[in-house]
Length: 283
Image (cartoon, rainbow, N blue to C red; front, side, top):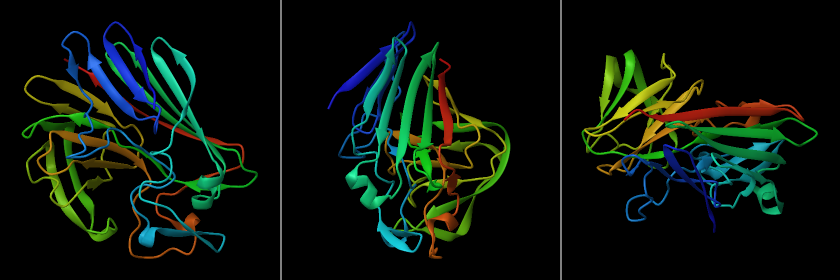
């Protein structure tokens, strides 16, 4: 599979054809790589696109108008190639649409565009879903970029936050209990055991960005209006994923139809939905 490149005076960008997955973001002045390399001995991913579901469905199944479908964790697009439909010196835009196989798992037609644009020392990633059906469609969508870091690095917010985290169990199904995370605090330290119980699943933040910083780097990550922010890594691993989600894993209350799923997006025929995330390298 191909890897496509773009660059400007400050940054060099690489994106894989497979999954339109972010592969590399290097600050030229230092040569520092900011994107996790996808070591298969730890976690093979780098920045998968989550569509049309985030996390796992209960029993990997769901219903549309009374018909049952099966769909794997994180959906159907992350392990399929995208087409490069636009390229400039500093931007790359990819497209994936439905096919016969996807319609067996997800019975809607769609255009899914992923656009990467570098400007100065920042990268903006736009996700756009177009409903090409003659009926409503239902979906979730999210991003999952992994950033290189070290144990002891810090995630910080501008103002103190009071939040609890939701968690998933060993079957990747959402638990009913919430767990304390930040109690009027600004900082979350990445420790060896922070992710022993899998991802932190956070809603209710009062800000739209955070800072990830270590001894020799600092980046600002903006997740804007995403209702859920996932933060995850394998325990003790040298990366962290910062994940804006429009949707969430299933819980154990089985829904009779996809339209009743928590966080689901409803899109009328011919309409589109988009969201951005942005990373700005501050030093």
